[in-house]
Image 1 (cartoon, helix red, strand yellow):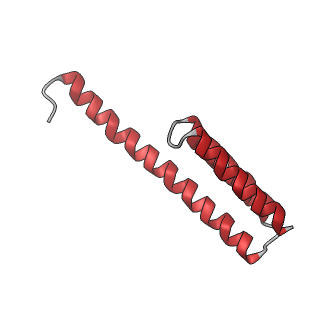
Image 2 (tube, rainbow, N blue to C red; image 1 turned 120 degrees about the horizontal axis):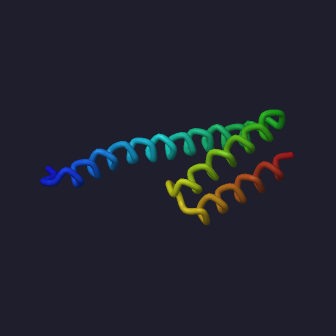
Length: 87
């Protein structure tokens, strides 16, 4: 337990930020899974919209530091290539 007022505040902030970061990571994973399922199902009509949504979520997570920018770029690149190959 925190012994100082400022340490207690930092602990509260950490709890809130951890919850936000976990939610953002979970959203990225969910969108990624839906995109991969659409690729496997060859759902050509849904792919552009899902890729756009995935890119937005991943870049949002990278911008806030939840995932590294290089990781975000790699994920986007690999899934974009898979989407292009599906068409």
